[in-house]
Image 1 (cartoon, helix red, strand yellow):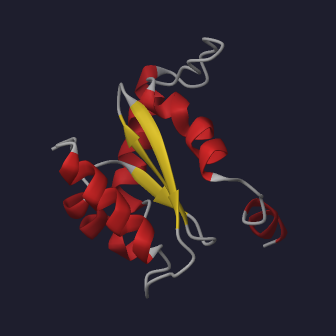
Image 2 (cartoon, rainbow, N blue to C red):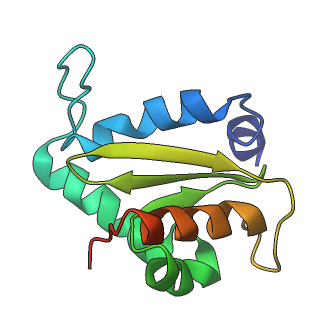
Image 3 (cartoon, rainbow, N blue to C red):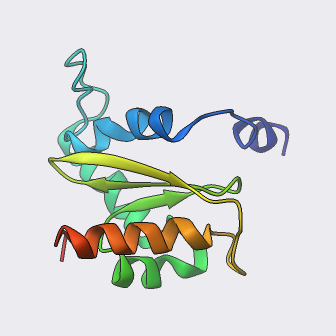
Length: 120
């Protein structure tokens, strides 16, 4: 429990969060220094895991509405990945009954709808 509480207590802004997940949009490679953080295979697996369970019991609905791998946090932050393109982070403090940001999910749904992007 101690480790979980420490991990949930990290202080980040949306820019930092998006930067920290950018390697997953870049097939496991940090685009800033070209460091290989994960193999391509492991990067694909981690994106798939985020797609299937990154939003707890709301993962299927997030996949349907947003169409991207993503991960929510208990502080209202959400990060999503457009493979081969970018990572995007949003934040909204109001959480729904699943513990996910209400406005964060709505914002990402509008974003992906507006730019016509989805992994499906």
